Amino acid sequence: MSNKTAPQIRGMKQTNQRIAMVTAYDYPTAVLASRSSADVILVGDSLGMVILGYEDTLKVTMTDMLHHCKAVARGADGPLTVGDMPFMSYQVSTEQAVKNAGRFIQEGGMDAVKLEGAGYANRVHAIVESGIPVMGHLGLTPQSVKAFGGFKIQGKTLNAARKLLDDALKLEDAGVFSIVLEGIPAELAEMVTNAVRVPTIGIGAGGGCTGQVLVFHDLLAIPSAAPFQFVRTFAKAGSLMEKGLRDYVAAVQNGTFPESCHSSHLSEPVKQALQKEVVRKCM
Ligand code: KIV
Image 1 (cartoon, protein in one colour):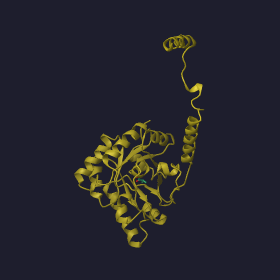
Image 2 (cartoon, protein in one colour):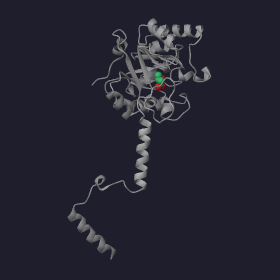
Image 3 (tube, protein in one colour):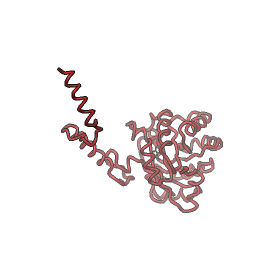
Image 4 (spheres, protein in one colour):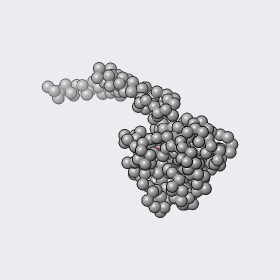
């Protein structure tokens, strides 16, 4: 199956189809996301927190991202794949932004890239001009966590809400094919969705967006940590995995694994001949 295209995802708004996006970070999660018929797989820089154990996304590098994108590209079959441009991969210059976006396509095997904020709308435009589809991202953009003073809901005041609406229009003018709206009031997300022609994809932004995105490990509760307010636990995979691992460790420790069926065996004649040789060698 070939992957969906950015124009197809963009067109889903016109045909009133809801977009289901999920993150994936490696081959098995990409295979599972593809089998679930997700429309878009995002190789999010959230991998810094979910996979690498950092407290935010700021330490994630291009090398980290490309490593995970390559694995996802091998497992993705059907959904559009989007690589998340990490902190400082597009902020320094337009030239560097275009070059790094190109690496996501040429080396990472992605179909599109995502970058945060509207302050770099000129870079979004330059990347789009180079032939690479770009997904925008507004609201509680995690790469600005230090400027926000923590992971705090954005767009709550009149001025902040106005700015977010302006930013969405700026990104649309720059050529994005969709915009992620993260951590903003539901009413604002709905207004933005109505104001732009491109689809919006919400996370912690209510049900009025064109689509939704959740982090793979959050929606499946891996590990079985308490989820954020905006997450619904769709399966307790973390508890199931933990139980499986505990059972494995116990079975090894008490000698009930492996059983005979888990091994290959010598034929009776080979076994007997070998046993005789062993006995002779020991005498
Ligand atoms: O990095 C990520 O996973 C994201 C989504 C949460 C939108 O940016």
